[in-house]
Length: 352
Image 1 (spheres, rainbow, N blue to C red):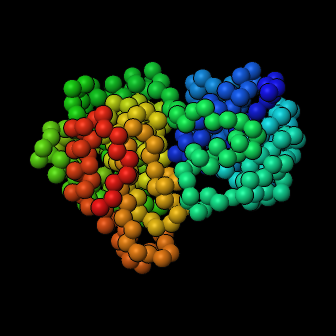
Image 2 (spheres, one colour):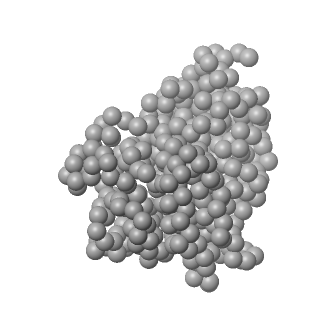
Image 3 (spheres, one colour):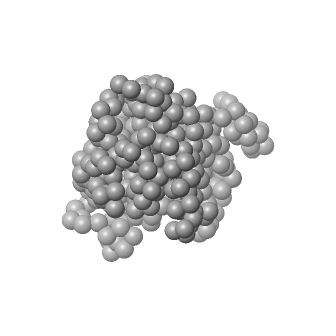
């Protein structure tokens, strides 16, 4: 297969989506070992791609900032045209990305047939909303369209020396030693329909402390509702919300013994780093299900309860997010203990 190509992989949605797209880079490199391969992403996800051994460049498209207007986006597309890419692999369909790669004159443009999908040269029917398989498998479909074989499903996340050093300084200041068992909790998510009740996270800490001695670190991007105030009277809880870059979050999760989180991007960072994960899912929506978005790492687990909703109303739920409340703190705590006491056992799906 000829490999003197310039290839652009595109994913301009969220953090976890980019992490789950990293196997694509390795598989493209295996098919085109001498190609120039770049990845186009949003500014805040670029840290996922730092140091990727299969990647030559990161192209940042800031659709909410520098390239917010249509004119600025066209300028970006014309700049991209000057880079003379041969192939664009568009992992997430957006009107802008399809327009940009069309204007950029990229000869082969493969992606999903929706949102100006007619601008693509190779179109794959979009069935992701059915949640029939994992997001990693959907990305493989696009590679198959190009005749690229899947040789790896391994996620990649960089552990940077400067990020490790920052975490070490924070640990020294907070008296966290290398011998401490470390539980990291992420009580945040992009939508209220993904947020397990805070009291449940607190209950899990209480239950685990009946059997273990450990320290807790709370992480998250920001906390406008002062959620972490609910943890302030609990001993050995360290609030790091809003303190860490994405790279530093990865360095922290690499050190964690177990990570308990709502369905969110950090789950996939932890999975990429082989940190045991318990991911809590709520919504009964196939396109947002754990079958599509569950963690892939060894000893990673998802907890999910189907409470009989025919159609999920998401953030407009009239049932008080019963699906989330149906996942009990006792089950999360017992699953954490199973992971901690049986670290080599592979357990993926847990249902009450």
